[in-house]
Length: 372
Ligand code: NAD
Image (cartoon, rainbow, N blue to C red; front, side):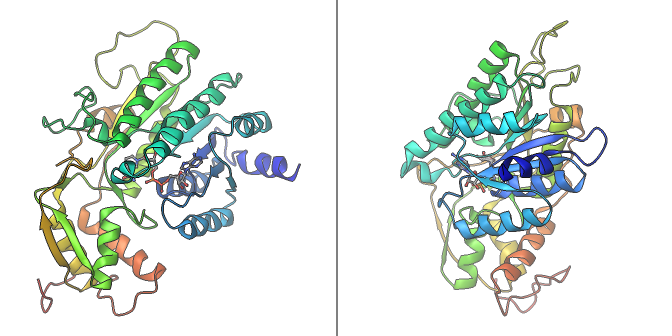
């Protein structure tokens, strides 16, 4: 009963026309930031997360505590718990689901393949099923796909209609499967589904398993940093991605007058078709450059080892074309890697109480006096 009361209080929007959003993976990096942003503008938000130990659960708990101070509860729950999802939808008529819970990480899929199938395929079905069966209102679902679906594509920048039939990892394959599953739910139940292909999202409260975060830790600890030669990434700052997610939620279920692929036939009536958008930064950067920026911000030199990229699921480069997201909900990334990493390092040194870090808070950091 207290559980249901809490949901009703938190899920109710505090502004006219506000959304009422169930955020899965709310204790995760992107879910945390999106939940904060939704709550800040007066939307109702309820989160859920299973707090798994893929990376430090205490970071997820810290995000949960911060969200609680903003009136956003994050329930301990697994998306595969269909009964729980049904109870949630019975307790509150959510208008939107922002589905971000997933097993992330490309390389870990070689160690724990079933975890990817469980969360990214079975769990995704569980969320779509609960949403599709909830009538009046049937919530619009916006969920995280990934730039990894472009796999071994080389015709960058990647547009949404480029080939996605050559995934280079099981992670990518499950994300690609998610897009096919979304299409089926849209077709059969008329479920409004919008997929967002994120491109290497980074920032404060980020994921310790991601390269920029792991490199920052290694630089501080003096541990070796292993770089893959020639790797380039379209690093995208979290605030830009959050704006994209909110824009996608605001337009979900509404006709945009154009499809994401530009290929679809315009229907006179019936549900809006599946929409899929890139949310990237449109300017790929060598990973070596990312390390150089971190060295400068941390005031320490990395102990670098450059190796050829192994066949571990990583792709050589990513590069987003975001014209469809710009057209349909005004998405425009504005944060350079230098600025975004500065925000990350400021948070990083504070959160981990790192002494002796240089200049995380100075705006223009000179490289003078620092080994390079
Ligand atoms: P994250 O791991 O920080 O967040 C995912 C959250 O989902 C975690 O807190 C985890 O505990 C939770 N979760 C996992 N399986 C669950 C389950 N079965 N039930 C309930 N909760 C579960 O990752 P993130 O970086 O915030 O990513 C969010 C989404 O965006 C994911 O779908 C991810 O695949 C996708 N994505 C992220 C990036 C990126 O660069 N961060 C890039 C492309 C796609």
